[in-house]
Image (cartoon, rainbow over all chains, first blue to last red; front, side, top):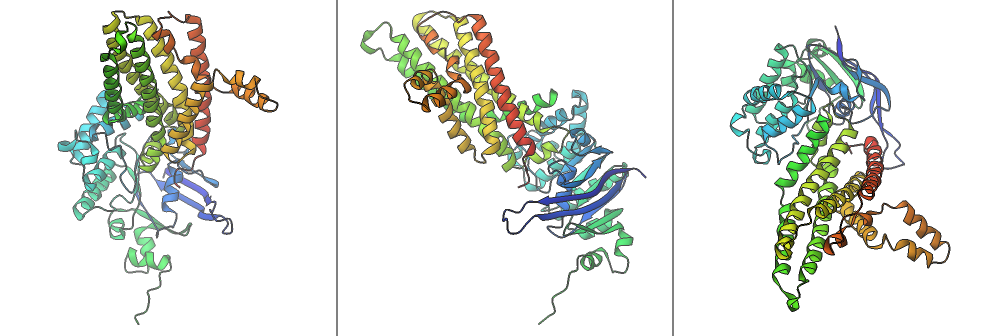
Length: 250
Length: 259
C-alpha cells in the first residue's frame, strides 16, 4: 500500500523559556505511515504531541531531526500541501469576508480556474448546508456554522488527504453527527483522512487504524481491533496504554 | 503570482470594510474645505495656504493609513490564528510577505488617488488651474515613498508583537527622516568627532524619504521634476523596499508561529 503521509524518526524539541529546565521533547522519534484511502485516528492525552505532529506535517514547525513527507514530498516544500485539506481545532477565518469570498480566496491560492471555483463553492456550500448564509460575513456566524465553513475550506481543492485537528471539538451532537457523516462520505470517495480526536467512541466508529501517542512517544498503532485487543473497548485500551490509574474511592 | 494577488485582495477588502480610511478621508476633507472657505485678509494667494494645509493633511493621513494597516497584518493573522489555515495551503512565507506588501501598497495607492483627486478639485475650483502632470508626479513619488514605509513596517511587524509598537516606532523614524533627512549632513559637519562620523554615516545609510516630498513643487507651481530624476528615485525606493522585504522574509521564515 502507498504511504501518503509518512514520518521517519521525527523528533521535535522546544527550547524551554526557563534555562534551568532544559529542552522539552514534544516528539521522540515518531515513525508513522498513513496509507491511501484509510481513515486514521491520531489519539493521545493533552500534551502528547498530536498537534506538534500536525504542525510539522503542515510546515508550521521544523523538525529538530528526522523528517516527514506528504505524497513523498518533504513537508518543508509548500507544494507538499497542494493535495491536502486542513481543518484546525478551532475555527479561525477572516471575519470580514463572507463564506463565499473566503472559499474563493482559498481557491485562488490553489490555482483553481473560475469555472472550477464556482462549481466547487456551490457543491461545498450545499454539503455543509451554508447556501443560505453564503453572502453573510463570517463574523455573524454561530460556532457550528464557522466550523462548517472550516470544513468547506478544507475541501476546496478536492484534497486526497484531509488533516483534521479535533474536528468535532465544541460542536453540539447534531454538528458532530454532520461532521462524522462528511468524513464517512469522504472515506467512501476513497479520500484519506488523518484526524486527532478525544472522542474515542467516534474514532472507534469511523477509523480503519489508530495510533496512540503519549509524552511524545508512539505507544500503539494498528487497527481499532488490534489496539483494543484485551480491553472492553478502545477507551479502556487507551486508558491502559497511557497508564491511567483510577483513584481509589475514599 | 495569482497567490500573491489573492493575498493582496484580502488586504484591500479588509481596508475598505474597516472605518480607518473613511474617518481619515472625512477629517481631511472637512479640514481642507474649512480652510478653503475662509478668505484670510482677502489675500488672492490664499489658495497656496489651502494647498499647503491640504497636502500636509494628505501626507499625515496617508502615512497613518499605510502604517496602521500594514502594522496589524502579520500580528492579526497570528492573533486570530488565520495564519494556520493559510500556511496549510501551498503558499510560501515569502509569498505571504509579498502578498501583504502588495495589498497594503495598492490599498494605500487607492487612498492616495482619492485624496489627491479631492485636493485637485478643491484647489482647482479656487484657482481654475489643474496641473495634472505635476499632480500625477507628486502622487507617484508619494506612493513610491509609501512603498518603502510599508516594507519597513512589515519588517517591524515580524519582530514586534504589538501593532501599536511597530506603528509608533515607524512613525517616529519616518517623521524623523522627513524632517531631518536633508539637514542631517549639515548638522553632522557642525559636530565634533566621532559624532560627525556617526551622523554622516547615518545620512548615507538611511533611506532618504524626504526626496519624495514634492509638496513645494505643487504649492508654488514649480513645474515638473525631470523624468530621469523620478526614474532614479523610483529605482532607489525599489531597492530599499526590496531590502526591507527580504529582511522581513528572513525573519518570518524562521518565526515559530505556534508560540
